[in-house]
Image (cartoon, rainbow, N blue to C red; front, side, top):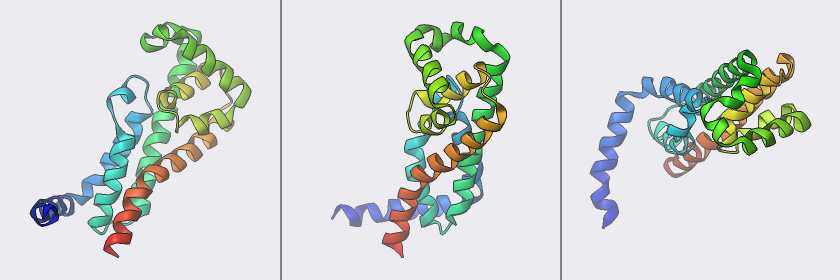
Length: 176
């Protein structure tokens, strides 16, 4: 009974998504970008949104790779901005709002970046609060750019894929 009542709503949502499908890629890029910036990431639940967006995009017959690359590119660009900010402010970032409030997180992140290097950048994408902080700290610690950029690109691809694919795949499987 519930499914019969939900059918008109489902049709309205799909019509809306199909009508505005061209906006999905820029939105996914912006969500990935914002999720990778310190402070901004606390207000953007893009990980959860990616699950739903993947499903809606599949239901609108969109191809997976454009939204995957949009999300990964946004995350990569956000990481680069955070890295550059860290490089510019160096040790002064320890006095920055959220980092100043949690000095133990900053200290542990520095140790993690020192010990794990590129792997810290890759794995941090899957660790909520550390997602935007590791690139900032990597920049402050002057991680070499040739080590940071590939790690950030890989992390963005893995992260965007991991959270867009389930919704996309389930919808594709059910509808296909």
